[in-house]
Every structure is written in structure tokens, then in C-alpha cells.
Image 1 (cartoon, rainbow, N blue to C red):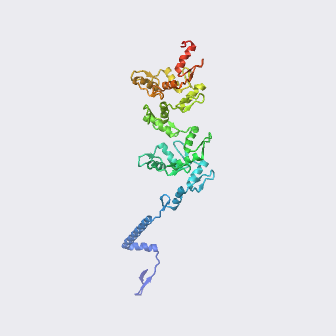
Image 2: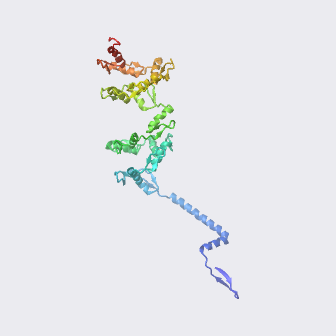
Length: 429
């Protein structure tokens, strides 16, 4: 609104002018800076009120509690998904194999097993994954990254689920129980695998040979036999392995670690299998038996070597003289005859030997050590082979037979001496 004076008139005339609201605001701000500062203070007060309201709304946020375990959730559908753990409800079903899931995203990941879709590929070994989380966990195999650390013992883990399961080692918690036999487990995955013992289910089938597995881990290890895949690499020498535990055992070559110690003789081993084989020397246990003659052996390797006596197989051949051998160890000893190499020397007398076992056996002459003891009479011996021969004096076993006359002997040396009777080198006593 604006006042003006007309000509020849003393009275003012009011002229109305239309002004936009936005222009009026600008005009008001330009004309009166005091009004502007008041307005700004009002706006600040308004924003403070809004912030206060936000704080009130966050403090008054509704939480949804699980009636079974008391866990809190900020969203109702999170609680609904969670309660399926307790109820066992699995509303999402695979149309191909019928497997059911509690979550829709778990179903979507599962369907990629049927379609073969693996959009995430490892740049180190080329392995493909249907799920981003699985891919990220796999990458840590190569990097060795273990970002999740136990507050109790400091042990690191590549994924959070492994840490949660590990914590139960300290607490002793085993929340997952088998409905068939009552056995309890700290992991739900362990319970699922265990349940297949009762059902006989083996869902993992090898496409190459048809062998079936109840657990995905041995199935994955098995498939590497056919593919030749070796995803685990030694950081020291670069040697590759198909199994992670094989890599862990190999690393002990570099570190010198031998965690398994024999309580009888104090000998240490880097591998559990070697330790178990060795302990049978002291116990006399022979779980591996020959189907041809019934002879027992402490190790599977010894049984396989023995079978070559019946088959007369000699797979190891010397390139120098053409002589063939049934045992790899005998072949290695033989090759050193041609080279004359004696790498192992006795510190007491300086005598050289082709192998460490020969040296270890020899040093017992100086030390008087006799680690092998007969369980029948208590007599002790320097080598396991002498102990085995001695045990036959109690059992009456004579496994070495003369091909000429059929006479039996308890040890190979006695047979060799007897053979000279037939050749004329020696007269029979």
C-alpha cells in the first residue's frame, strides 16, 4: 500500500499496489535488518524444537521383543523373521528340489545352485560364488585376514558366525539339540549334518564318480581329486595344496613345529597320522590285515607294501642298473649306491649313512638306548624290526618260507642263510 498527493488537492489519496508474497519478504528483509535478525532467531528456535522432537521420537522408538529369548528388534518384520528360528517355520520353498527356507534371500541364493549362476569370481583361484558374502569369506582364505577376534583368548576368525560359534567353547553353551538322540551342538550347521546320520540323507553327489556325501565340506574336498584344484598356497615356498589342513601340516616343515610327542620314547611328530602309526609300535596294535595271508600291520602303508609280496609287483625301477623294487624307501637307498652319497654322519665315530633312520639306529650303539620293548617278556631292542622278529619267538610265526623246500623262518636273514644250502654255498647243520 502506497500514499501519494493529487494536484490541487490537500488530501492524500491511497493507491493500492499488488505485491508478491516473496517480493514482500525480500523487501521486508532489505528495509529492516533488525527484522531479519529476529526472523533468524525465530528460525533457530524452530530448528532446536525440531531437533528436540527428533530426540524424543528416537527415545520413544518402539522396540519389538522376542518372547522366547528376549532379543530386541527395531522393525516388526525383523522380529517375525527371527521367531521362525524358534517355531521352525520355513515359508519359502525351492520349486526345483523342495528345500525350505526361513528367509526369501536365502531361497534366492539357493536357487543359484540349480541355475549355476555364480556372479562373484575369485581373482586368485578362479572359484565362483552365488553369494557376495560367501565370496568375501573365501577371499580371506588367500589373504589370511581374520577381522573377528575373540575377547577371551584373542583368536581371530575370518567370519562373524565362526566367532559366535567359538565363543560357546568358553561359555559351554550348546543350544542346538538332536530330537532323535538328544546330542547337543554349539552350531546349528553341526546339528543338521548330525541329523543325516539318523535319516541317512546324503544330498551332495559327485558328478564325476557318483559318490555321495552328507556334508558339503568333504564333498568339496573330494571334487578337487577330479579337478586337480589346489587353492591353498604356502607363503614360504609357493607350494600349493587342495586342503587347508595339508597346508597347515606343510608349514611345520618351515617352522620346525612338532606338536605330537610320544609318551613312551619322547619322539616328536609334525603329523597326527605319523604319531598314531608310531604309537602302535609300543602298543603292538595291528589294525590292518592282509586278505591273502591274514598278517597284521600297524600302518596302511605297510599293508600296501606287503601286498606286493603276493602280487610280485615292483613299481620302482633304477635308471642306472634297471633293478626293480617293491618299496619306495628301498629304492631310494639303492640309488645312493650309484652316487655314493652319504649325507648323514655319526657325531661319535664319524661313520656315514644314506638315511636318517640308519643314522638314528646306529647312534643307539653309542647311547645304549633301546626304545622298543616286548610286551610278553619285557626284553628291549634298538629297532622295531628286531622287536618284530623277537615277538615271533613267542607266537611261533614263521612268515618267510623257502621256495625250494617250503621250510619256514621267523626272519628274512635266517631264510637267506638257509638258501645257501640249496646253492651249495653252505652245508646244512
